[in-house]
Length: 243
Image (cartoon, rainbow, N blue to C red; front, side, top):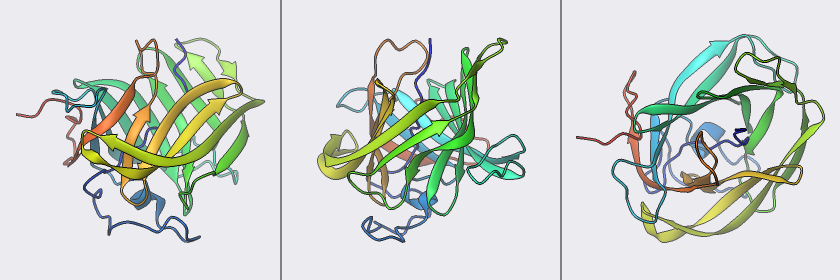
């Protein structure tokens, strides 16, 4: 099964993610540090439900578990060495389902690599912009990417010539963590005619909802934020039932 390209970055809904100083005015050109706007501090854990109610254990956990350095990444400016990549790990009941490797500069969040448990591994040459500041409605970006997608030990599929697109809409969303609702911005991702996924934020506080296919999914479940936690170093319990 081909797991669709999208990023589902973790962030806080009702409580700002670690280190945030409150809402950011997304209409300003200098609309903040993407790490804070999109909730990408190491240790940020976001637990989500696939229904409108809090689920135990959570239906999905997404956490920034590390900030590593590797030499394989490709950036839009041609850089590929000593690049710090944040590791976003998706878990269900403790099992890793997918891992994204993210690079953050002063404006953009880029997806450099995606590992899907028991399935494919994809590298993007250069990394794909999947979110950026300022966060605003009607933002649109088309990207033609190279790179390679591999299934197990096969020779891989060249991605050269494929177009990845996002469009941003604005509207009120409710979640188990915020039943009153909040004004949110939704990134809608596609690859040509194919819908890939969606990722919704409240400006300056983070994720409220995401929709993506994980291994075993036959459709696009919608995961809604119910809880945020801060993980200690080495803690891999995001998305697991808590004692």
